Image 1 (tube, rainbow, N blue to C red):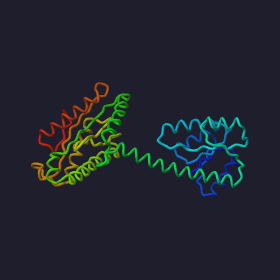
Image 2 (cartoon, one colour):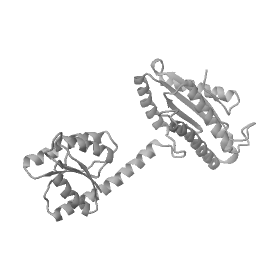
Image 3 (tube, rainbow, N blue to C red):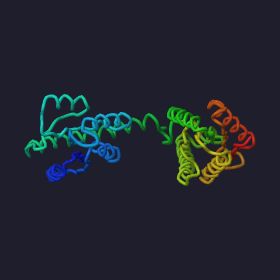
Image 4 (cartoon, rainbow, N blue to C red):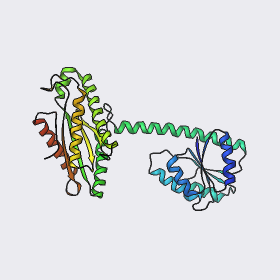
Length: 313
């Protein structure tokens, strides 16, 4: 268990750290409430032991701010126990109202301290279990079960947020629509299991290209999604028309390089992809128009023979 100990008295820190460490716990330190906020945000402790009276920011204010910070995160609630030498009714009420969970004397007897920490360890284990379960539920709700890419609902939510940010910053916005060529013929000829395998392979190829360009700082914030069936989308905020075209060409090539046999794909003989892309000034357009334009260019790529990208008008 990771414990954040917040106390401005070095003697208290030394004694309490020694006692907690003897039980096998990791102890982090902060000298006041302001330091506690910074350590809490970066280290995600399992438990906070908080002094009340401290310079710069007292324990009650720090607890209020920690609770406010937690409300903005996908973190489980973190227990906060106040350390004090004056167990008054007034302090107990103030502590609970500030978001604290318990009161404990700085000079608590060893058996009581040990028992409380065991109880907190059980809570910490439960929190970790709940966090893992919540993450799994989040993934199930936001990821496509077959390909592991963002699903349509998640894509729409993220795209809306990125579009709003682009408007605020006065930046352009790009989109690619991608479709596997003659995929129905592939399914009919090779079977649906082979079709699922092909979808997974193509999705991975798309994601690798996007991730590589994001990692190389050519793109920022771009992500791939399964739009539906054999159709995919790549949301590309703040990219030039040239970069958008380079991304589309790289994805088409990456799918071609998979060399998945597809006898029914006309002259190509392998699984190929067609792509249509569009870029728009967010100040003078709407996202629905961006999708329509990208889809129209995807249709152009199909009409021109497939296995290619059309992003420039």
